[in-house]
Amino acid sequence: MKLEDYIANVPNYPIEGIQFKDITTLLVNGEAFKESIDKLAEFGRKVGANVVMGPDARGFIFGCPVAYALGVGFVPVRKPGKLPRKTISESYTLEYATNTLEINIDAFKKGDKVLIIDDLMATGGTVEASIKLAEKLGAKVVGVATLIELEELKGKEKIGNIPFLSLIKYDI
Ligand code: AMP
Image (cartoon, rainbow, N blue to C red; front, top):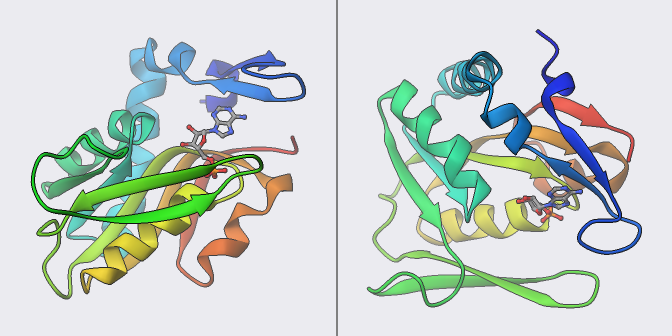
């Protein structure tokens, strides 16, 4: 099955010059969605993850079923102000703005082996901030997997030698 066939490319969205990869056309297809989750979960099994972490909001869509398939828990990485208890946060810079992500301060136990799942790796800023959050709590990120990778943006360079899997690769 060619998963790429189920992604819709939307030029100049949300701003001029961006080739937006719309995953909703994959989500609506049961076979393509299942195949994506099965492959991401297989990777999670291989790296020995005992917990999955996924960034707001599309990381939830892929991360939760992967956690379920592995029979492990899921840690949501949220935008500021969404988690009602004590949190830790990490900020990173985008081209024109700063983004902040948060997790619960009790999200991980020391020594947890974390698999980060997101829909797409672009510059790698989101994943890098997620890694820092997990490490602050003494967890170890044992793998990062995304449905899509925009290879030209070299996000992979931000994660060092942590094992990485992407199911669909684009030049742009
Ligand atoms: P980054 O932090 O630069 O790796 O960006 C990753 C996040 O931004 C992912 O969670 C995506 O949901 C979103 N994103 C970035 N670029 C695109 C794109 N071209 N199409 C769709 N989503 C994108």
